[in-house]
Image (cartoon, rainbow, N blue to C red; front, side, top):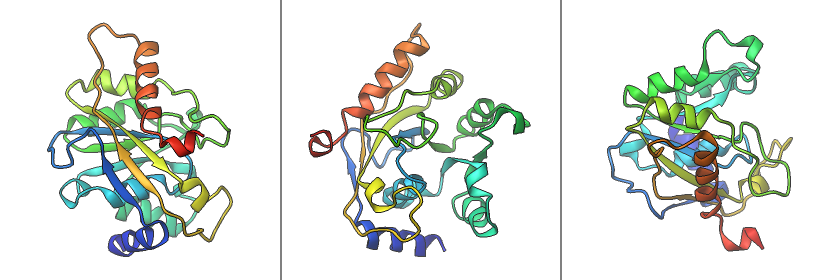
Length: 205
């Protein structure tokens, strides 16, 4: 199923992985943080990762969406080995930041979306939530890699069932780490700027 999903994603999007700052061959434990425009975002990132990285990268995904049907749950849990997080605090049995930090600290890389929800506005990014900073502080050895996904919101807009074939790209930027004494606000602004810097010029026009 994993192979079939990868082939389908490439057929529909002709997706390209652009390594503009991060080394695709690095064995470093990473926290890939990306813009969030579609429920297929992590699938596209996962598709362009080299095979040597793909097997040890897990997406962090919303439990309420990915457990909505038996098929979604199967894909999330058994194909992508996703960390399913309850978005509503009242439904959580544990702290999601601590959960992510434990997995990352054990050497498994993660894919997260620090906006917290899909961006349906005209702004390039929504404000970042503080979880990415808190995870990075708990696992200071991890590399934080900005990832910009281009065009997927047009391929699979909200509510769509059938994707529209369009070319997409996934750009990986230079890894970041929290600086000594850096505040949450300063880091989030720096991380957000690093992500926006990867945005293709035609998207910003």
